[in-house]
Length: 498
Image 1 (cartoon, rainbow, N blue to C red):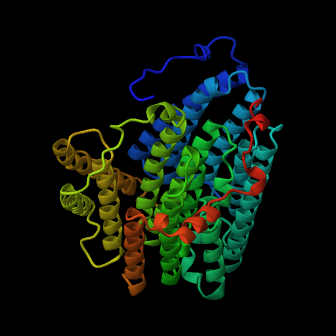
Image 2: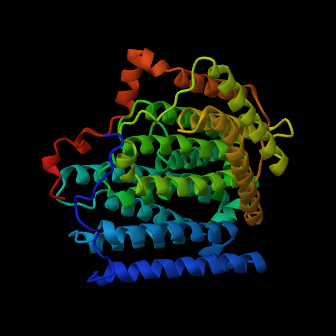
Image 3: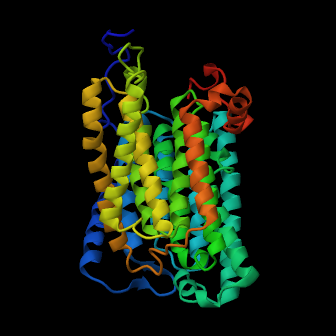
């Protein structure tokens, strides 16, 4: 109850340094060594320009070394966390081997240049993630979740195969870099087939609406596997579109379509999250929305922004999953847990959060130069304003600080955060400068404006509780967010022993 101190009832945590199986120990050390090597490679890449490649097979550029650092860091955290989480589990060695295999596959994918190699690694990465979802063989729901995920990932790989085959047929190039250099030959139906297949493959892998079912059905995955999934695997869609940016930017209609589907998933994830009651489902729906934002940034032509988003979201979501268990204790009923600002303070809250959002957008525009012209950069800055406004409003409403302290702390917290985001964005853009297409801002259209208006409308609707006032909408959202029936967790007796 509120005010009571928690007591330890399960005994001390196991000592993972004593009597640990060899494989988990060795792979954990190896991954952290790979992280140190990746950091050194990143530094070397910054100092020494030029082509680092195995002609026709692999190429190491700024995006490659950046993602090597990110992948190995997240993997190292997951390996270290799993040393205790999986201690004594009958599947411990297989779990570590699969996580390590996933890490190596992801690192190879971001360096792959040959189309066949890229496609094979994309498929392998999906199959390994499906294996992690169904790690516990004796748990029928886990195996069902693995099957659901595997079916989605095979479909994504099939679509990628269609895209790669079409691009090879149209350009005669058998490498990603070769296709990027031959985009002037692309056009007509072949371009639309290739670009459409690439976009849908990215949507499936990143769990965008309506392909979010596999993600919400994967709650049987061990917590560290969920962290790796939400912090790393779902980012593959943004990486795919960035690698093939020269293809999808040829046709403005394709880019507009990416903005539309990204926007639908961004608001869809927010709506689905609003009706969830458990921590992991809320985090899953949050990922659906955040991946929508990532694809929107790619559709606006700012691929460096998409990469920045997936990196920062990865850090946030890995922390959220790995600390999810601790939130049970931290959210005990309390009279001071939530302070709702109402009455006379409502107008003050609205003004303060609006000013903070506008100031955040201004800081972003000044530091990045985006939003200063009439192009898609203006929409990018608009979403920065909306995101900052929402975060500031949540901070004001849900804190134990006094009213005065809340209003003073919000700009002091969020404006430096936007500054950090803008600086990271600029650094990532500089690192990716050698790629064929880093920034390709598009013209604003009426449809862009309609998407922005719809986004704001849905946001205001959620904040005013429209989903709670409409029983039909609430039921529709619950149905849309239901996992596959075979993966539903029912009585605890079915999985306690695992």
